[in-house]
Image (cartoon, rainbow, N blue to C red):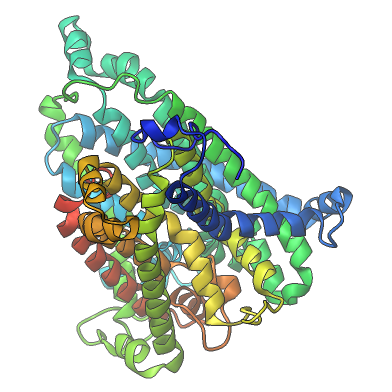
Length: 577
């Protein structure tokens, strides 16, 4: 093997090996393993998508690509995507920034439960959020009818259409803003605030002249992340936009694929590349903003006293949580408890028949629960076990190469799910050697889950491994233990809590998702997201609400389990802590 330098890829702990002129077998195996995982789970699907868009016949044809993305329908959907994502991000900033200030900087009572409740919309599937708001407003709302304040029959539901999509983007993505800004606010040293107070600065002046300039990179990063989330969101515009023919790029792809099937794959691949480009532009903006963040960190975190405004602002914060989180959940639960959508919820009409129907009688819904549980659990278990050797191998890299590998692994999650679904169809439509075609089987959904949620499992384990003292591994190696034995007897037990947390995050994300499986499901392989969307479209709103409530209960139970594990997890794994 030719001699090569390893200074760029070796980790900082192997200074002696850095000076070596040949790759050791263990280091070469680590590099090959990381390259294989990142290549198969990330670069291969993204590369196949790009190839289908610009060279569908294996010949470069940029003119045809330009023609496909500039049709009237594509341009209109692109404008709708940019419009709703931009204004949704602005609304998310308007909601998330005040909560981040209150939780991270002030002495407001109940900051932790406020932060936890604000994060719930992010943990719940977008289609469930859309369904809950649909059932909160409108003349058929079981909750409003029970309270006697429902609008007259025939009144349009105000959340359907462009404005409703923007509103729900703001609510759904406000937690992203909250988490991003809270990290930055927690790093502001208390000395800055005390110095400004000593100079006579009022709280508004302090926020404008001290906090806002320091938080500018975090604001830009949060805005970019909220915009990216809006670009790729499918569940909200599907339920609020499709009924009035207001199409974004994800819903346009879904409608055309549903109508014409794989025959329009080049067109859909081209639109998917446009979505991916918009999303990656937002990710790049976020990364550039993050480069300037955190340079002022140090010292005790700042704390502002609200004084006489403490309780009025607390009441306002809880009122906002009531409107954004509690009331939609109550509306969804109310719909699930009435025999049919539109009936008034009373003690006489309240029933659990909808839950019994979807959980124990309807073959399609029972199958969807089984499929979602099995596919999500399989993805969680595979990724949890695979994350340990991947993170161990990644730890041999330098910080720069490690960041690059992690960024590449995040690509399938950074790009919208509809984009990944098209990539999987392109990859697995034709038969593969030995295994045949995965298209129209449950296996293609499982592979898509592995691609999309791999970063959920890898990040907590990688963080935990970097906190393990190097002496343990070196002592075992000196005693003659091989690399595999050291990994499974020393590293794996120490990072097991992080691996379990990653598995739960994978399960929660896959159990609720709709965007990927909306294009990949087939008869007998329906997932919960697909069946919920189908029931709502079919007018069986009470059954759809029962499924949505069941998924919310599952998410809350998983969040509770994760919270119990928090004491054994690396800092930053759980966003509400």
